Length: 226
Length: 226
DNA sequence: TTAAAATGTTAGACGTATCTAACAAATTAA
DNA sequence: TTAATTTGTTAGATACGTCTAACATTTTAA
Image (cartoon, each protein chain N blue to C red):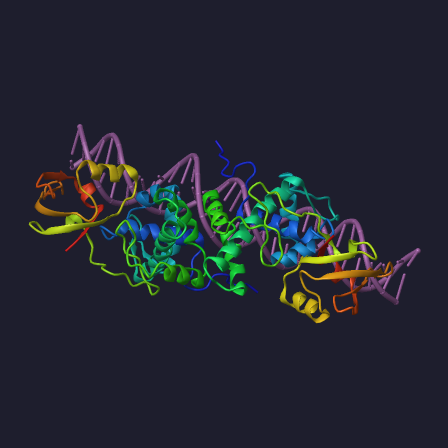
């Protein structure tokens, strides 16, 4: 007799980490490639490959050989539930436990896997049911509903539109530094002046009326709305 | 090239769970047997057997085939560090997060494996550096030092001694109920009237001057001091 | 447009933690 | 004190998550 330890919808800690990364890396463009995931998760491509087959069987992702990986609604729900726990944990560590923002990420990475609705509901309550974390990232509610899910990658915004930078899809320090150098930050509005069909770069005008050119690679990782 | 992921002293989550159980189950008698551990950890005896070989290699336990398992000083240090985290977590969940005692054990079981000194030091600070948890169990300090480590099993106390019940080495509800039926509880003093050499049972007199007989099996699981 | 480079997949291996089946030792009871 | 029972060990299997080496496909660039 064989017993299934995990319930239908549940995932192992590892699976949780994968779906979370698939979700966030595919946010901007709608999909993510194997090598990108491998880099993010610090594993080799074959490992990602076999895990994707597994997640595809679970219907968390859509995955055809040599094609990009897409999250399904089911996978999205999983990811949002983990992201909710991560963001609540971070906020809790900062607001209640008075730890510094720079030191909470790794702890939250561990706390997000704690299995206990009571624990997270209580944190949510103590924090006053917050809707956003201090990076501007929305916190999904207990049902996985997320406020303002209409964010798009900067390179997908229309020419001449004025959009607000609401988040970045890459939290590596080097990327944040790069934005800083360009005089861009979360919360600020920019005007999309021109999108180069040629190389996908975007020319925009920032708050200080300065014209800036940003590469496709970078534009893809900046989330905007409106 | 092969990289070791774990540092010398560290253990996997599984190893941590094993050494914790070895430590607590061997508290009273100085050792614990395979089947007892298997029962506690919900695994089969061969699993315990192979894990004990592993922990013996790490010098956390002393283990010879068909003999009881003993914790080494090194293993004790590991165990105390996990127990510290568990007890701090429980107290935090109850005192700060206002969860009920009955619901915190499983959450603490998960939190105790969070790797972050900052996290635990902060909890310790918020709780005012507590020395005992509400079950009367001492909380080891950051160096693994434990206040009053002179507790002994009830059956090891001398005849005619008056001792205080400070903790139980078995937190299953059925055991606690059994003690309740006998009119014994943590914090209460009892007089050891007689110890039967024959079957190891102990006759004692409780607060209400009532004479009680408790079996060796039970006496072994009641920790007393003084 | 084809050759080189980048990216992805398959096959086969390994370590961890677990199991069952079969056997061995120690303890208990007749 | 020997036989039965309990307890422990060994051997071999399995699932998970990972790897490397070899091969396949796709993309890029000459």
